[in-house]
Length: 322
Image (cartoon, rainbow, N blue to C red; front, side, top):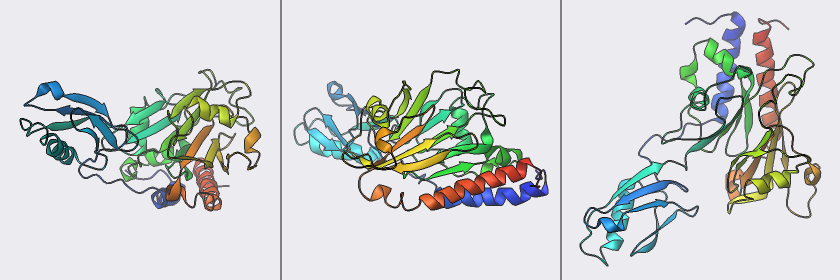
């Protein structure tokens, strides 16, 4: 399919390069068990030992006879071999086991905003941005696909003009998302309006809390809710979470605005102690250790990406003229 205009020919390569520079495709080889996956473990020779278990955050499952066994990082075949190897020491009748993943919770994506069914989507292999949005019920009538915010597990944020990519028939160029990514589909605004005046807040008001919290997902927005309240409503910081590395992505009239906060007791980071969360804010709690390294130092580059995406979107919308 030919592109619609010279401006679109110019804009799409930049969109794609900005997208590819941040996203890297996940491995699509044999699935490896992860934390919070649910496993069905079947012992053909002794069915009374059959179990449905959830993998703990430390990668361990508790099983009869052998107790705790670490399975995270293993394929289902490797997990079965490890379980049989241990259980056969106590019960020689057991020489075979079948391990199946019934819930792929370690590979999940959160979709928020103007989609049919906001919330968590889980996959054996996480697909691309457009597929994830369709799996979440698709964009609503109020959705603005020209400014879709993608928040990576590291906290890096970018805005993608998905409508331009789809209009040009370039959906097949979209990269698979990384597990743990949050996608926010904003609503359309007319010049000078707000989300409330545009009628986009008819749904129950929520704030989205993701990242390394106990129960990521939407939290009902309450009056004068602080960022601490929002995290508490999501079950609090998880064992791998770090209050030093909290990112807030807030909706703006034109585009999302993101900033980082250090919420450890005794610190004062950009008014984080008193920050009142707003309608459909995203709060992302980072991970302890090197997994979140460099997020704060890259905020300038992230802001530049967001700005460039908005300039491109405006350029396309104006038919290549400013």
